[in-house]
Length: 112
Ligand code: 5GP
Ligand code: ZN
Image 1: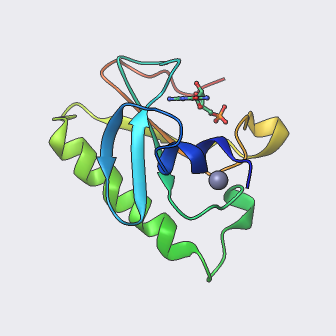
Image 2: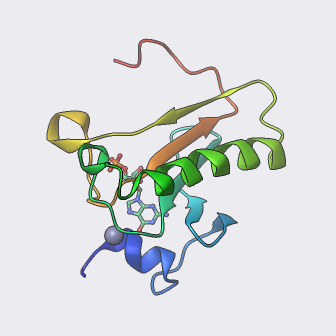
């Protein structure tokens, strides 16, 4: 499958690893929007949040377990934001579900 994030998870395209386990891979965003900006993906290809169902939701649980581990490892004690963009209006530009973990600055709310 011609998927950028599947290739990154497989190590076929280089990335800067932040966290890895058998279900999840996390790496530095190439265009960071905060001093700490990780992209967290399930290794299993899911195209977007609109395709989560009972057959793949354990991959999403694993992503959120990784969020907590990364936050602890990186000492994100002041907090952080997890963002998923889905579809055209959501601003999704890569068709493999991914979660942005943003931290180390005060993040505006609402995001606009
Ligand atoms: P989206 O806009 O789909 O929610 O987020 C895609 C994110 O992937 C963007 O923040 C973008 O900077 C990041 N990205 C796109 N291509 C690459 C890449 O080749 N390497 C890395 N590390 N990040 C990428
Ligand atoms: Zn993929």
